[in-house]
Length: 130
Image 1: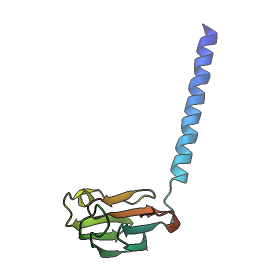
Image 2: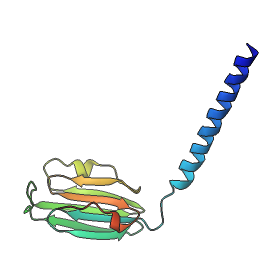
Image 3: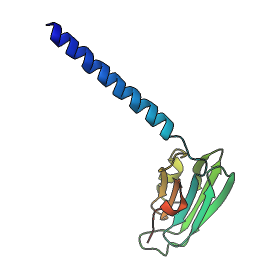
Image 4: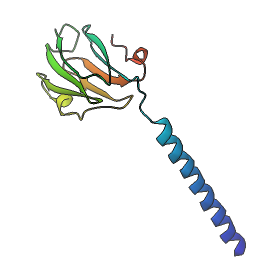
């Protein structure tokens, strides 16, 4: 009986130590890089890259010439370290309803217009639209 209690205590201590290490690593390596970049592009050729730290708004106009896309426009705003699509004339408004993004790897996609907006550590990591 005493051996079982001791083994249980050792196992619990090991699990707590593993959790503690995971917690420290995930909270220190997950810090947002200062050079994060926002890449916005469309399937018909629009491409723009801005620092996540920028305060800028612009309109992405798409011609609808790419297969499966519709002509229209999306209004993109980068402000206070977040990126948001504030308006669009697409049919479903998923991009407008999406919460603002601010972390590397997050994306906002407008399928009707073929627009992808993503936060990246390096511009070279941008999704390749064909």
